[in-house]
Length: 393
Image (cartoon, rainbow, N blue to C red; front, side, top):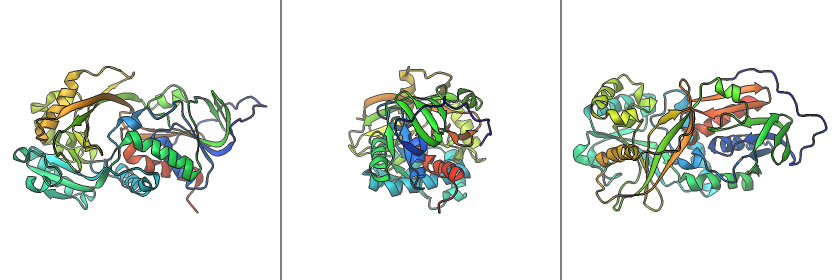
């Protein structure tokens, strides 16, 4: 959504930029900001990225590193995810980012879940996907509880990177290979192109793209508040499987009533009704299962969803228990042990997956409000930068 608004008041006359002159200043060095820096650099723009932290510490490094195509909402979101997946596949080897594994197995534990997967296969989004028997799926997921599995949807579209290392490597590649300038440990106080006022002096930039993540108050707070944004907290875990576990990402029934590409299908209603009777606590706490493998063999497991106006720092153990109950119902790893726990935060909105706001002709505010930053940001960024500067010549 693009919303017109009168320009902000300019900084006082006589102020001089201290960090050079740029075509584009990107505020925020999470995956959304980095995606916009790449899209602008590919159009030959001089780009600077300004971030308040010394290194990436937010949602972009706290997530699965799972570039999820399968299950994204039909239409624009799914198309953005497909495009983003292609960009990840293109730039990852150039940036030294390992693709830890490819593909996704969605495990149906109930007949109602199988019906959802069969309906999904009949859609455009099901192209190149296929249904596996439990025995066939075990080739991808050796620890699969085949005796508790109705069927498995296999998708080749999805990718996994290790987000904790991938985001820093992506930033370094943008700097070294694409000529993007980074200004870190720097808070942007005011955005009034051609001047951007920061805690380390003023940057001269003709246009600005603000990618604030879950920071709703530093820049344009009234405009961001108009979208009804809240903060979503999620629980994550790292697990040592202590056995061969999986060679692809794994999801299960709970994800089929949460990911809109499945949940908006008519067949999902019966599954949700059964889950409400059998796993009400999991639904109440927004729990569903994603399991992905890291290069050291450990698994990143999640997650849950709790919404509020503030970033609650507390992580009740019973929520982790709900996640691991679903994990244990799908995978037979009796010796598995939890190595690490953490929480992540991202912006959420009740009626949209993202928004792009236009405070003035030379400024955009871009916020992904669905936890799909890694999965859709490259596609979103190409659209935003294309709208600002026109198509590539």
